[in-house]
Image (tube, rainbow, N blue to C red; front, side):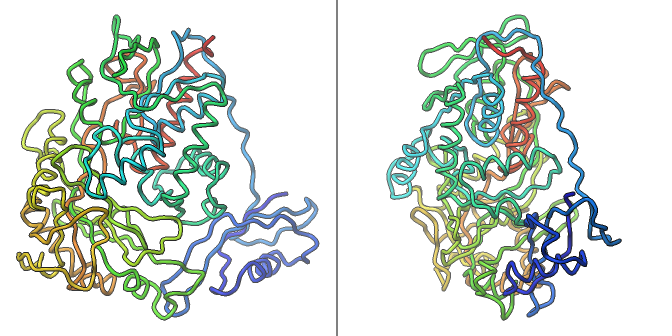
Length: 528
């Protein structure tokens, strides 16, 4: 008999022995009657400082004859039978094609490969090694490669991020996502921590191992291969043209493009694919010394080796907008993330240890179709470009990102650097960020600062550093799809993941990719 025990509490120094002792106390049995005690979830309760505690849920196995105490925190784990995934009977022309190798594309291709469908994957950017080299060139003052960069290439935009695996969706497929990451090299803790993350340094290696598994199972992954057009016949897709002058014949295409494939969106729009405007958020990156965040969250316990660097999540609701923190990276750096020339785009990145001096987070404000200055379905893209180009101009038109002390931003003056040094992976220039964001965005950020400072002491410190601009929080478009998860305009075309407007983060994008793969399997027979 397998059970789950929740709400087990230990001190920071308690360790495995204290946890096992609490299990035995809960069950009122001796240690020889329980086996395979395994942490299912671990979270940190920092509400009552300095008495910070860890809270656990654990699973364990008992003999069926053992009587379980009546306790709301103890339940028998009933494993539901998994629904068998059976192939459909529609004939597939060629092999399924997955366009894009970010989280949605990777997991879609992996599930297809695991079920014998031998997918072809095309990715406009390079593999991880090539990508890392080209990103390094850009970060060190060289030219931006518009096809292989932080947004495009093996692993998608998430490769150069914190590798956060938190998600708000409640889907059984989330477990498969975590298990697959773990299988290919992610640390054990991602399976039980409340806020799991992998880190850029480890994630790069995991992505390579997942690609090799897809190839081992009969799949094909082609890098530096971009979809430039689609071939259709009588309302059904029948092939994809690439930049290598090839035509891939297929009647099942997965669009796992990511949120920055603007030129591909424009091509699809010209081909009659329906797009709708979608709200997203824009703003800045804000940096504090990590020790300030640690002290605010953990008090005297800050720096305890079992706690690690602290994070935060903040939001403030106004009448029409919300200001909030997003993609918070403890002990990380602010990343130069442009995918088009003459623009500045920021993001955040941490390695697994999260051991850099600064904490950074996006500090963004919600925007929507009413802000986009037009009814065109792709108007949100032009809205993003406008502020990215203004950030480029504000930074001096030489790829330097505009930076500004928080106090100077609030006062509307340029000023200089203070105690917080920029971690940005390129050059920076002190400038007034008020000049490269809409006034309603900067006003909302300013209004939120005092509220956030009350929630997190030190957040409003004068020397906190802003870097502009953050515009790629999520896709500015959605591609509508029907009950079969196909594009409403073109049979056999499956919009997937974050770029298509159906996800927001690594796990939700991966889950959507799995869902698409399952639909393809249910629809089509295994290709010969």
